[in-house]
Length: 589
Image 1 (cartoon, rainbow, N blue to C red):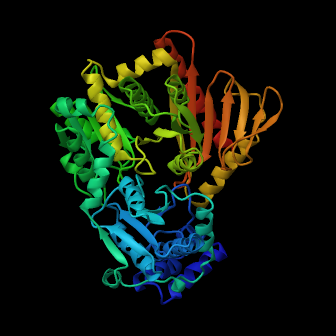
Image 2: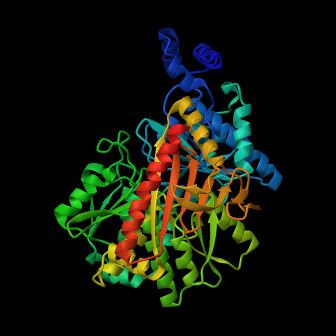
Image 3: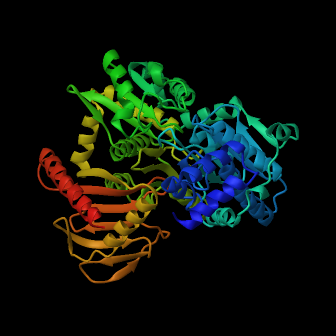
Protein backbone atom coordinates (compact mmCIF):
# COMPACT_ATOMS: atom_id res chain seq x y z
CA UNK A 1 0.00 0.00 0.00
CA UNK A 2 1.22 3.53 -0.72
CA UNK A 3 2.53 4.67 2.67
CA UNK A 4 1.37 8.27 2.33
CA UNK A 5 -2.24 7.24 1.69
CA UNK A 6 -2.21 4.84 4.66
CA UNK A 7 -0.73 7.47 6.98
CA UNK A 8 -3.38 9.99 5.92
CA UNK A 9 -6.11 7.41 6.49
CA UNK A 10 -4.79 6.64 10.00
CA UNK A 11 -4.60 10.34 10.83
CA UNK A 12 -8.24 10.75 9.75
CA UNK A 13 -9.37 7.72 11.78
CA UNK A 14 -7.60 8.97 14.92
CA UNK A 15 -8.64 12.63 14.73
CA UNK A 16 -11.53 13.38 17.11
CA UNK A 17 -12.43 16.45 14.99
CA UNK A 18 -14.16 14.14 12.50
CA UNK A 19 -17.54 12.50 13.09
CA UNK A 20 -17.35 9.14 14.79
CA UNK A 21 -19.17 7.52 11.89
CA UNK A 22 -16.56 8.74 9.40
CA UNK A 23 -13.70 7.64 11.65
CA UNK A 24 -15.17 4.15 12.04
CA UNK A 25 -15.65 3.89 8.27
CA UNK A 26 -11.97 4.60 7.65
CA UNK A 27 -10.75 2.45 10.56
CA UNK A 28 -12.73 -0.46 9.15
CA UNK A 29 -10.97 -0.08 5.78
CA UNK A 30 -7.62 -0.10 7.60
CA UNK A 31 -8.55 -3.14 9.70
CA UNK A 32 -9.63 -5.26 6.73
CA UNK A 33 -6.65 -4.07 4.67
CA UNK A 34 -8.63 -2.70 1.75
CA UNK A 35 -5.59 -1.14 0.10
CA UNK A 36 -7.25 -0.11 -3.14
CA UNK A 37 -10.08 1.77 -1.42
CA UNK A 38 -7.73 3.50 1.04
CA UNK A 39 -5.50 4.65 -1.81
CA UNK A 40 -8.46 5.91 -3.83
CA UNK A 41 -9.77 7.88 -0.86
CA UNK A 42 -6.47 9.30 0.42
CA UNK A 43 -3.81 9.36 -2.31
CA UNK A 44 -4.57 13.03 -2.97
CA UNK A 45 -6.78 15.96 -2.01
CA UNK A 46 -9.71 16.84 -4.22
CA UNK A 47 -8.69 19.20 -7.00
CA UNK A 48 -10.48 22.05 -8.74
CA UNK A 49 -10.98 21.17 -12.40
CA UNK A 50 -12.79 23.04 -15.18
CA UNK A 51 -15.99 23.05 -13.09
CA UNK A 52 -14.71 22.96 -9.51
CA UNK A 53 -14.64 19.77 -7.42
CA UNK A 54 -16.55 16.59 -8.07
CA UNK A 55 -16.22 13.17 -6.46
CA UNK A 56 -17.93 10.20 -4.84
CA UNK A 57 -19.57 11.01 -1.51
CA UNK A 58 -17.76 9.47 1.45
CA UNK A 59 -15.04 9.79 4.09
CA UNK A 60 -11.56 10.71 2.87
CA UNK A 61 -9.48 13.57 1.48
CA UNK A 62 -10.32 12.53 -2.10
CA UNK A 63 -14.05 12.36 -1.44
CA UNK A 64 -16.89 14.87 -1.12
CA UNK A 65 -18.00 15.18 2.49
CA UNK A 66 -18.78 17.79 5.15
CA UNK A 67 -15.10 18.39 5.84
CA UNK A 68 -13.83 18.73 2.29
CA UNK A 69 -16.79 21.05 1.62
CA UNK A 70 -15.84 23.15 4.65
CA UNK A 71 -12.19 23.17 3.64
CA UNK A 72 -13.01 24.24 0.08
CA UNK A 73 -15.30 26.94 1.43
CA UNK A 74 -12.62 28.29 3.78
CA UNK A 75 -10.23 28.39 0.82
CA UNK A 76 -12.84 30.31 -1.16
CA UNK A 77 -13.61 32.61 1.78
CA UNK A 78 -9.91 33.48 2.09
CA UNK A 79 -9.82 34.50 -1.57
CA UNK A 80 -13.05 36.51 -1.25
CA UNK A 81 -11.61 38.36 1.76
CA UNK A 82 -8.28 38.98 0.01
CA UNK A 83 -9.85 40.32 -3.17
CA UNK A 84 -12.42 42.28 -1.15
CA UNK A 85 -9.66 44.11 0.72
CA UNK A 86 -7.90 44.77 -2.59
CA UNK A 87 -11.08 46.33 -3.96
CA UNK A 88 -11.87 48.22 -0.75
CA UNK A 89 -15.25 46.53 -0.21
CA UNK A 90 -17.01 47.14 3.10
CA UNK A 91 -19.38 44.15 2.82
CA UNK A 92 -18.68 40.76 1.28
CA UNK A 93 -21.37 38.44 -0.14
CA UNK A 94 -21.73 34.99 -1.65
CA UNK A 95 -24.69 33.38 -3.47
CA UNK A 96 -25.45 29.70 -2.89
CA UNK A 97 -27.67 27.16 -4.63
CA UNK A 98 -27.93 23.38 -4.67
CA UNK A 99 -29.50 20.51 -6.56
CA UNK A 100 -31.32 17.38 -5.40
CA UNK A 101 -28.35 15.10 -4.81
CA UNK A 102 -27.48 13.37 -1.55
CA UNK A 103 -26.49 15.95 1.03
CA UNK A 104 -26.70 18.86 -1.44
CA UNK A 105 -28.86 20.95 0.90
CA UNK A 106 -26.72 19.99 3.91
CA UNK A 107 -23.53 20.85 2.02
CA UNK A 108 -25.03 24.17 0.88
CA UNK A 109 -25.82 25.02 4.51
CA UNK A 110 -22.22 24.15 5.43
CA UNK A 111 -21.03 26.60 2.78
CA UNK A 112 -23.27 29.31 4.26
CA UNK A 113 -22.10 28.53 7.80
CA UNK A 114 -18.40 28.73 6.94
CA UNK A 115 -18.94 31.96 5.02
CA UNK A 116 -20.93 33.49 7.89
CA UNK A 117 -18.12 32.58 10.31
CA UNK A 118 -15.78 34.50 8.01
CA UNK A 119 -18.14 37.51 8.03
CA UNK A 120 -19.18 36.91 4.42
CA UNK A 121 -22.94 37.33 3.94
CA UNK A 122 -24.46 34.17 2.45
CA UNK A 123 -27.53 34.35 0.17
CA UNK A 124 -28.97 30.82 -0.13
CA UNK A 125 -32.08 29.83 -2.07
CA UNK A 126 -35.01 28.57 0.04
CA UNK A 127 -35.57 25.76 -2.44
CA UNK A 128 -33.26 23.91 -4.79
CA UNK A 129 -32.51 25.79 -7.98
CA UNK A 130 -30.39 25.23 -11.09
CA UNK A 131 -27.04 26.66 -12.18
CA UNK A 132 -28.49 29.58 -14.20
CA UNK A 133 -30.44 30.83 -11.18
CA UNK A 134 -27.28 30.61 -9.07
CA UNK A 135 -25.43 32.74 -11.63
CA UNK A 136 -28.37 35.15 -11.72
CA UNK A 137 -28.30 35.42 -7.91
CA UNK A 138 -24.58 36.25 -7.92
CA UNK A 139 -25.20 39.13 -10.32
CA UNK A 140 -28.48 40.25 -8.71
CA UNK A 141 -27.00 40.41 -5.19
CA UNK A 142 -23.70 41.85 -6.47
CA UNK A 143 -21.94 39.02 -4.66
CA UNK A 144 -18.20 38.44 -4.74
CA UNK A 145 -18.65 34.74 -5.51
CA UNK A 146 -21.11 31.88 -5.79
CA UNK A 147 -21.25 28.17 -5.01
CA UNK A 148 -23.45 25.58 -6.70
CA UNK A 149 -23.56 22.24 -4.89
CA UNK A 150 -24.06 19.73 -7.69
CA UNK A 151 -22.45 16.88 -9.58
CA UNK A 152 -24.37 17.77 -12.72
CA UNK A 153 -25.17 14.56 -14.63
CA UNK A 154 -22.85 12.17 -12.74
CA UNK A 155 -24.22 8.95 -11.19
CA UNK A 156 -26.07 9.12 -7.83
CA UNK A 157 -23.02 8.36 -5.66
CA UNK A 158 -21.39 11.65 -6.71
CA UNK A 159 -21.71 15.22 -5.54
CA UNK A 160 -19.70 18.32 -6.30
CA UNK A 161 -18.89 21.95 -5.70
CA UNK A 162 -18.90 24.54 -8.49
CA UNK A 163 -17.29 27.91 -7.74
CA UNK A 164 -18.41 31.11 -9.44
CA UNK A 165 -16.87 34.56 -9.27
CA UNK A 166 -18.40 38.04 -9.03
CA UNK A 167 -19.36 38.19 -12.71
CA UNK A 168 -21.59 35.12 -12.27
CA UNK A 169 -19.26 32.91 -14.32
CA UNK A 170 -17.28 29.92 -13.13
CA UNK A 171 -14.06 31.01 -11.50
CA UNK A 172 -11.06 31.57 -13.78
CA UNK A 173 -7.39 32.55 -13.27
CA UNK A 174 -5.96 33.96 -11.10
CA UNK A 175 -8.76 33.45 -8.56
CA UNK A 176 -9.11 29.71 -9.19
CA UNK A 177 -5.36 29.19 -8.66
CA UNK A 178 -5.49 31.23 -5.47
CA UNK A 179 -8.38 29.12 -4.16
CA UNK A 180 -6.54 25.90 -5.04
CA UNK A 181 -3.38 27.15 -3.29
CA UNK A 182 -5.43 28.10 -0.24
CA UNK A 183 -7.02 24.66 -0.22
CA UNK A 184 -3.75 22.79 -0.61
CA UNK A 185 -2.04 24.83 2.10
CA UNK A 186 -4.64 23.87 4.73
CA UNK A 187 -3.42 20.73 6.49
CA UNK A 188 -5.58 20.94 9.61
CA UNK A 189 -9.34 20.74 9.11
CA UNK A 190 -9.91 22.19 12.59
CA UNK A 191 -8.56 25.54 11.40
CA UNK A 192 -11.66 25.99 9.22
CA UNK A 193 -14.04 28.59 10.66
CA UNK A 194 -17.70 27.68 10.97
CA UNK A 195 -20.83 28.54 12.93
CA UNK A 196 -24.24 27.07 13.51
CA UNK A 197 -26.53 27.75 10.53
CA UNK A 198 -29.37 29.04 12.71
CA UNK A 199 -26.96 31.39 14.48
CA UNK A 200 -25.97 32.75 11.07
CA UNK A 201 -29.61 33.48 10.29
CA UNK A 202 -30.11 35.22 13.64
CA UNK A 203 -27.00 37.34 13.18
CA UNK A 204 -28.23 38.37 9.73
CA UNK A 205 -25.17 36.83 8.08
CA UNK A 206 -27.20 34.13 6.28
CA UNK A 207 -30.15 35.21 4.13
CA UNK A 208 -32.82 33.10 2.41
CA UNK A 209 -33.47 33.91 -1.26
CA UNK A 210 -37.05 33.47 -2.44
CA UNK A 211 -39.43 33.64 -5.38
CA UNK A 212 -38.98 37.38 -5.93
CA UNK A 213 -35.49 36.79 -7.31
CA UNK A 214 -36.65 33.73 -9.30
CA UNK A 215 -39.41 35.80 -10.95
CA UNK A 216 -36.93 38.50 -11.99
CA UNK A 217 -34.94 35.77 -13.74
CA UNK A 218 -38.01 34.47 -15.62
CA UNK A 219 -38.89 37.98 -16.79
CA UNK A 220 -35.33 38.51 -17.98
CA UNK A 221 -34.95 35.34 -20.05
CA UNK A 222 -38.37 35.59 -21.71
CA UNK A 223 -37.54 39.14 -22.81
CA UNK A 224 -35.01 37.51 -25.18
CA UNK A 225 -37.53 35.52 -27.23
CA UNK A 226 -36.86 36.04 -30.94
CA UNK A 227 -40.56 36.01 -31.79
CA UNK A 228 -42.55 36.43 -28.57
CA UNK A 229 -45.72 37.28 -30.52
CA UNK A 230 -45.64 33.92 -32.33
CA UNK A 231 -45.10 32.08 -29.03
CA UNK A 232 -47.96 33.87 -27.25
CA UNK A 233 -50.42 33.40 -30.11
CA UNK A 234 -49.41 29.96 -31.40
CA UNK A 235 -47.52 28.35 -28.52
CA UNK A 236 -50.34 25.96 -27.59
CA UNK A 237 -50.02 24.33 -31.03
CA UNK A 238 -46.69 22.77 -30.05
CA UNK A 239 -47.18 19.63 -27.97
CA UNK A 240 -44.23 19.26 -25.61
CA UNK A 241 -43.08 16.48 -23.29
CA UNK A 242 -40.56 17.49 -20.65
CA UNK A 243 -38.58 15.60 -18.01
CA UNK A 244 -36.34 17.13 -15.35
CA UNK A 245 -34.89 13.61 -14.81
CA UNK A 246 -35.43 13.90 -11.03
CA UNK A 247 -33.45 17.16 -10.90
CA UNK A 248 -33.99 20.89 -10.35
CA UNK A 249 -35.72 21.68 -13.64
CA UNK A 250 -39.42 21.03 -13.03
CA UNK A 251 -40.48 24.38 -11.54
CA UNK A 252 -38.16 26.71 -13.50
CA UNK A 253 -38.66 25.07 -16.91
CA UNK A 254 -42.43 24.69 -16.50
CA UNK A 255 -42.69 28.32 -15.38
CA UNK A 256 -40.56 29.70 -18.21
CA UNK A 257 -42.48 27.74 -20.88
CA UNK A 258 -45.87 28.80 -19.52
CA UNK A 259 -44.82 32.46 -19.27
CA UNK A 260 -43.80 32.49 -22.93
CA UNK A 261 -47.02 30.87 -24.16
CA UNK A 262 -46.16 27.17 -24.33
CA UNK A 263 -49.08 25.76 -22.38
CA UNK A 264 -49.39 22.34 -24.03
CA UNK A 265 -46.71 20.72 -21.86
CA UNK A 266 -46.77 17.26 -20.29
CA UNK A 267 -44.30 16.31 -17.56
CA UNK A 268 -42.96 12.77 -17.16
CA UNK A 269 -44.57 11.93 -13.82
CA UNK A 270 -42.04 9.25 -12.84
CA UNK A 271 -39.21 11.81 -13.12
CA UNK A 272 -41.06 14.96 -12.11
CA UNK A 273 -39.97 15.34 -8.49
CA UNK A 274 -36.38 15.60 -7.21
CA UNK A 275 -34.93 12.24 -6.21
CA UNK A 276 -31.34 11.77 -5.05
CA UNK A 277 -31.27 8.14 -6.24
CA UNK A 278 -32.33 8.87 -9.85
CA UNK A 279 -34.24 5.56 -9.76
CA UNK A 280 -35.43 5.51 -13.37
CA UNK A 281 -32.06 6.07 -15.10
CA UNK A 282 -28.53 4.69 -14.89
CA UNK A 283 -27.19 8.22 -15.36
CA UNK A 284 -29.25 11.46 -15.45
CA UNK A 285 -27.46 12.80 -18.51
CA UNK A 286 -29.76 14.18 -21.24
CA UNK A 287 -26.97 13.73 -23.77
CA UNK A 288 -27.71 9.99 -23.60
CA UNK A 289 -30.88 8.57 -25.22
CA UNK A 290 -31.37 6.22 -22.26
CA UNK A 291 -32.00 9.18 -19.94
CA UNK A 292 -34.79 10.38 -22.26
CA UNK A 293 -36.46 6.96 -22.59
CA UNK A 294 -39.52 7.75 -20.46
CA UNK A 295 -39.96 11.13 -22.14
CA UNK A 296 -39.80 9.49 -25.57
CA UNK A 297 -42.31 6.84 -24.45
CA UNK A 298 -44.75 9.55 -23.34
CA UNK A 299 -44.12 11.50 -26.54
CA UNK A 300 -45.09 8.46 -28.62
CA UNK A 301 -48.13 7.63 -26.48
CA UNK A 302 -49.50 11.18 -26.72
CA UNK A 303 -48.33 11.95 -30.25
CA UNK A 304 -46.38 14.95 -28.97
CA UNK A 305 -44.12 16.97 -31.27
CA UNK A 306 -40.98 16.91 -29.17
CA UNK A 307 -39.44 15.64 -25.92
CA UNK A 308 -36.96 17.61 -23.82
CA UNK A 309 -34.85 16.57 -20.84
CA UNK A 310 -32.53 18.51 -18.54
CA UNK A 311 -29.78 17.30 -16.24
CA UNK A 312 -30.02 17.60 -12.43
CA UNK A 313 -28.59 21.14 -12.26
CA UNK A 314 -30.52 22.18 -15.40
CA UNK A 315 -27.69 23.72 -17.36
CA UNK A 316 -27.88 21.19 -20.23
CA UNK A 317 -30.78 20.13 -22.40
CA UNK A 318 -31.37 17.10 -24.62
CA UNK A 319 -34.02 16.71 -27.30
CA UNK A 320 -35.80 13.90 -29.14
CA UNK A 321 -38.56 13.77 -31.75
CA UNK A 322 -40.04 11.33 -34.24
CA UNK A 323 -39.58 11.38 -38.01
CA UNK A 324 -40.86 8.71 -40.37
CA UNK A 325 -41.30 6.28 -37.50
CA UNK A 326 -37.74 6.78 -36.21
CA UNK A 327 -36.79 8.52 -32.96
CA UNK A 328 -34.22 11.23 -33.67
CA UNK A 329 -31.80 12.41 -30.98
CA UNK A 330 -29.91 15.54 -31.96
CA UNK A 331 -26.37 15.97 -30.70
CA UNK A 332 -25.11 19.12 -29.01
CA UNK A 333 -23.57 20.52 -32.17
CA UNK A 334 -26.76 20.05 -34.18
CA UNK A 335 -28.85 21.76 -31.50
CA UNK A 336 -26.35 24.63 -31.45
CA UNK A 337 -26.45 24.95 -35.25
CA UNK A 338 -30.25 25.23 -35.17
CA UNK A 339 -30.12 27.81 -32.38
CA UNK A 340 -27.43 29.93 -34.02
CA UNK A 341 -29.20 29.98 -37.37
CA UNK A 342 -32.68 30.63 -35.94
CA UNK A 343 -31.55 33.42 -33.64
CA UNK A 344 -29.40 35.22 -36.16
CA UNK A 345 -31.83 34.89 -39.07
CA UNK A 346 -34.72 35.94 -36.81
CA UNK A 347 -32.91 38.96 -35.40
CA UNK A 348 -31.86 40.06 -38.86
CA UNK A 349 -35.36 39.60 -40.31
CA UNK A 350 -37.00 41.60 -37.51
CA UNK A 351 -34.36 44.32 -37.58
CA UNK A 352 -33.42 43.50 -33.96
CA UNK A 353 -29.82 42.43 -34.64
CA UNK A 354 -27.69 44.66 -32.39
CA UNK A 355 -24.77 46.67 -33.68
CA UNK A 356 -21.35 45.00 -33.49
CA UNK A 357 -22.85 41.59 -32.64
CA UNK A 358 -20.67 38.74 -31.46
CA UNK A 359 -20.99 35.01 -30.81
CA UNK A 360 -18.82 32.77 -28.59
CA UNK A 361 -18.13 29.04 -28.94
CA UNK A 362 -15.44 26.57 -27.91
CA UNK A 363 -12.67 25.20 -30.10
CA UNK A 364 -14.25 21.72 -29.95
CA UNK A 365 -17.63 22.94 -31.21
CA UNK A 366 -18.45 22.55 -34.91
CA UNK A 367 -16.87 25.15 -37.23
CA UNK A 368 -20.14 25.15 -39.18
CA UNK A 369 -21.42 27.63 -36.60
CA UNK A 370 -18.58 30.02 -37.46
CA UNK A 371 -19.72 30.00 -41.09
CA UNK A 372 -23.34 30.71 -40.13
CA UNK A 373 -22.35 33.59 -37.85
CA UNK A 374 -20.10 35.06 -40.53
CA UNK A 375 -22.96 35.01 -43.07
CA UNK A 376 -25.04 37.21 -40.74
CA UNK A 377 -22.19 39.60 -40.00
CA UNK A 378 -21.72 38.29 -36.46
CA UNK A 379 -18.15 38.10 -35.16
CA UNK A 380 -17.09 34.74 -33.69
CA UNK A 381 -14.76 34.21 -30.74
CA UNK A 382 -13.42 30.71 -29.95
CA UNK A 383 -12.38 29.70 -26.45
CA UNK A 384 -11.10 26.70 -24.55
CA UNK A 385 -13.63 24.02 -23.59
CA UNK A 386 -16.11 25.01 -20.92
CA UNK A 387 -18.50 27.85 -20.26
CA UNK A 388 -16.07 29.35 -17.74
CA UNK A 389 -13.95 30.34 -20.74
CA UNK A 390 -16.93 31.37 -22.87
CA UNK A 391 -18.22 33.67 -20.15
CA UNK A 392 -14.72 34.85 -19.38
CA UNK A 393 -14.54 36.09 -22.97
CA UNK A 394 -17.94 37.80 -22.56
CA UNK A 395 -16.74 39.58 -19.44
CA UNK A 396 -13.49 40.58 -21.08
CA UNK A 397 -15.31 42.08 -24.06
CA UNK A 398 -17.66 43.97 -21.74
CA UNK A 399 -14.64 45.73 -20.26
CA UNK A 400 -12.40 46.16 -23.31
CA UNK A 401 -14.93 46.44 -26.14
CA UNK A 402 -18.20 47.71 -24.64
CA UNK A 403 -19.46 48.63 -28.10
CA UNK A 404 -19.76 44.91 -28.94
CA UNK A 405 -23.09 43.21 -28.22
CA UNK A 406 -23.55 39.58 -27.19
CA UNK A 407 -25.93 37.41 -29.25
CA UNK A 408 -25.30 33.77 -28.38
CA UNK A 409 -22.84 31.24 -26.89
CA UNK A 410 -22.60 27.48 -27.22
CA UNK A 411 -20.49 24.41 -26.58
CA UNK A 412 -20.92 20.96 -28.08
CA UNK A 413 -21.76 19.30 -24.77
CA UNK A 414 -25.40 20.45 -24.83
CA UNK A 415 -24.74 23.85 -23.24
CA UNK A 416 -26.23 27.09 -24.61
CA UNK A 417 -26.75 30.72 -23.60
CA UNK A 418 -29.03 33.11 -25.50
CA UNK A 419 -29.02 36.07 -23.09
CA UNK A 420 -26.62 38.15 -21.01
CA UNK A 421 -28.37 37.89 -17.63
CA UNK A 422 -26.29 34.94 -16.38
CA UNK A 423 -22.77 33.77 -17.04
CA UNK A 424 -23.13 30.03 -17.56
CA UNK A 425 -24.99 27.66 -19.81
CA UNK A 426 -28.71 27.84 -19.20
CA UNK A 427 -30.97 24.82 -19.63
CA UNK A 428 -34.09 26.81 -18.72
CA UNK A 429 -33.76 29.45 -21.44
CA UNK A 430 -32.54 26.72 -23.82
CA UNK A 431 -35.86 24.88 -23.38
CA UNK A 432 -37.81 28.01 -24.29
CA UNK A 433 -35.58 28.77 -27.28
CA UNK A 434 -35.83 25.21 -28.60
CA UNK A 435 -39.60 25.30 -28.19
CA UNK A 436 -39.68 28.51 -30.18
CA UNK A 437 -37.56 26.90 -32.91
CA UNK A 438 -39.77 23.80 -33.03
CA UNK A 439 -42.92 25.94 -33.24
CA UNK A 440 -41.45 28.14 -35.97
CA UNK A 441 -40.67 25.15 -38.17
CA UNK A 442 -43.88 23.29 -37.37
CA UNK A 443 -45.90 26.28 -38.59
CA UNK A 444 -43.99 25.94 -41.88
CA UNK A 445 -44.67 22.19 -42.12
CA UNK A 446 -41.08 21.28 -41.25
CA UNK A 447 -39.33 19.35 -38.51
CA UNK A 448 -35.81 19.85 -37.15
CA UNK A 449 -34.21 17.36 -39.55
CA UNK A 450 -35.68 19.36 -42.44
CA UNK A 451 -34.33 22.54 -40.84
CA UNK A 452 -30.85 21.07 -40.45
CA UNK A 453 -30.74 19.75 -44.00
CA UNK A 454 -31.69 23.19 -45.28
CA UNK A 455 -28.76 24.64 -43.35
CA UNK A 456 -26.40 21.91 -44.65
CA UNK A 457 -27.48 22.63 -48.22
CA UNK A 458 -26.61 26.28 -47.77
CA UNK A 459 -23.40 26.06 -45.70
CA UNK A 460 -21.98 22.58 -46.37
CA UNK A 461 -22.19 19.33 -44.40
CA UNK A 462 -20.50 18.84 -41.07
CA UNK A 463 -20.66 15.74 -38.87
CA UNK A 464 -19.46 15.65 -35.26
CA UNK A 465 -18.84 12.71 -32.92
CA UNK A 466 -17.61 12.60 -29.33
CA UNK A 467 -15.63 9.59 -28.13
CA UNK A 468 -15.23 9.14 -24.36
CA UNK A 469 -12.66 6.66 -23.08
CA UNK A 470 -13.06 6.03 -19.34
CA UNK A 471 -10.11 5.20 -17.09
CA UNK A 472 -10.80 5.10 -13.36
CA UNK A 473 -8.77 5.86 -10.28
CA UNK A 474 -5.05 6.51 -9.94
CA UNK A 475 -4.11 4.00 -12.65
CA UNK A 476 -6.66 5.60 -14.95
CA UNK A 477 -5.18 9.07 -14.42
CA UNK A 478 -1.75 7.74 -15.35
CA UNK A 479 -3.17 6.01 -18.45
CA UNK A 480 -4.83 9.25 -19.61
CA UNK A 481 -1.53 11.11 -19.15
CA UNK A 482 0.28 8.53 -21.31
CA UNK A 483 -2.35 8.76 -24.05
CA UNK A 484 -2.00 12.55 -24.20
CA UNK A 485 1.81 12.36 -24.31
CA UNK A 486 1.75 9.75 -27.09
CA UNK A 487 -0.49 11.92 -29.25
CA UNK A 488 1.55 15.00 -28.32
CA UNK A 489 4.65 13.28 -29.72
CA UNK A 490 2.82 12.23 -32.91
CA UNK A 491 5.15 12.76 -35.87
CA UNK A 492 3.49 11.04 -38.86
CA UNK A 493 2.25 13.44 -41.52
CA UNK A 494 -1.03 11.56 -41.83
CA UNK A 495 -3.59 10.55 -39.21
CA UNK A 496 -6.00 7.77 -40.11
CA UNK A 497 -5.15 8.35 -43.77
CA UNK A 498 -5.84 12.10 -43.66
CA UNK A 499 -3.10 14.65 -44.32
CA UNK A 500 -2.35 16.76 -41.23
CA UNK A 501 -2.15 20.51 -41.80
CA UNK A 502 -1.15 21.55 -38.27
CA UNK A 503 -1.22 20.37 -34.65
CA UNK A 504 -2.34 22.74 -31.91
CA UNK A 505 -0.83 22.06 -28.48
CA UNK A 506 -2.54 24.26 -25.93
CA UNK A 507 -0.23 23.08 -23.14
CA UNK A 508 2.70 24.85 -24.84
CA UNK A 509 0.59 27.50 -26.56
CA UNK A 510 2.04 26.56 -29.96
CA UNK A 511 0.69 25.42 -33.31
CA UNK A 512 3.00 23.18 -35.35
CA UNK A 513 2.57 23.21 -39.11
CA UNK A 514 3.07 19.83 -40.82
CA UNK A 515 3.17 21.36 -44.29
CA UNK A 516 5.60 24.27 -43.73
CA UNK A 517 7.64 23.03 -40.73
CA UNK A 518 7.07 26.11 -38.59
CA UNK A 519 5.62 27.03 -35.20
CA UNK A 520 3.13 29.79 -34.40
CA UNK A 521 1.62 31.03 -31.14
CA UNK A 522 -1.94 30.24 -29.99
CA UNK A 523 -3.93 33.13 -28.55
CA UNK A 524 -5.64 31.17 -25.74
CA UNK A 525 -4.67 30.21 -22.16
CA UNK A 526 -2.56 27.09 -21.67
CA UNK A 527 -4.51 23.88 -21.23
CA UNK A 528 -3.96 20.15 -21.68
CA UNK A 529 -5.63 20.07 -25.10
CA UNK A 530 -4.41 18.84 -28.50
CA UNK A 531 -6.01 19.66 -31.83
CA UNK A 532 -5.23 17.88 -35.12
CA UNK A 533 -6.32 19.98 -38.10
CA UNK A 534 -6.39 18.38 -41.54
CA UNK A 535 -5.99 19.88 -44.99
CA UNK A 536 -9.61 19.00 -45.93
CA UNK A 537 -11.08 20.96 -42.99
CA UNK A 538 -11.64 17.99 -40.68
CA UNK A 539 -10.56 18.42 -37.04
CA UNK A 540 -9.84 16.06 -34.14
CA UNK A 541 -9.38 17.50 -30.64
CA UNK A 542 -8.56 15.62 -27.46
CA UNK A 543 -8.40 16.51 -23.78
CA UNK A 544 -8.75 14.88 -20.36
CA UNK A 545 -12.00 15.76 -18.62
CA UNK A 546 -11.58 18.25 -15.80
CA UNK A 547 -14.28 16.66 -13.64
CA UNK A 548 -14.62 13.01 -14.69
CA UNK A 549 -12.20 10.05 -15.08
CA UNK A 550 -12.16 10.10 -18.87
CA UNK A 551 -10.37 11.42 -21.93
CA UNK A 552 -12.51 13.02 -24.64
CA UNK A 553 -11.96 12.95 -28.41
CA UNK A 554 -13.92 15.38 -30.60
CA UNK A 555 -14.14 14.28 -34.24
CA UNK A 556 -15.43 16.95 -36.65
CA UNK A 557 -15.73 15.75 -40.25
CA UNK A 558 -16.13 18.16 -43.17
CA UNK A 559 -17.47 16.81 -46.48
CA UNK A 560 -17.66 19.19 -49.42
CA UNK A 561 -18.15 16.99 -52.49
CA UNK A 562 -21.29 15.27 -53.80
CA UNK A 563 -24.97 15.41 -52.92
CA UNK A 564 -26.08 15.83 -49.31
CA UNK A 565 -26.82 12.08 -49.05
CA UNK A 566 -23.39 11.25 -50.44
CA UNK A 567 -21.71 13.65 -48.02
CA UNK A 568 -23.54 12.07 -45.08
CA UNK A 569 -22.49 8.55 -46.11
CA UNK A 570 -18.84 9.54 -46.58
CA UNK A 571 -18.81 11.36 -43.23
CA UNK A 572 -20.22 8.30 -41.44
CA UNK A 573 -17.61 6.01 -42.97
CA UNK A 574 -14.76 8.38 -42.16
CA UNK A 575 -16.01 8.78 -38.58
CA UNK A 576 -15.90 5.00 -38.07
CA UNK A 577 -12.31 4.97 -39.36
CA UNK A 578 -11.29 7.72 -36.95
CA UNK A 579 -12.96 5.99 -33.99
CA UNK A 580 -11.13 2.74 -34.67
CA UNK A 581 -7.79 4.49 -35.20
CA UNK A 582 -8.03 6.56 -32.00
CA UNK A 583 -8.98 3.53 -29.88
CA UNK A 584 -6.07 1.59 -31.38
CA UNK A 585 -3.61 4.38 -30.55
CA UNK A 586 -5.03 4.75 -27.02
CA UNK A 587 -4.68 1.02 -26.33
CA UNK A 588 -0.96 1.27 -27.09
CA UNK A 589 -0.33 3.92 -24.43
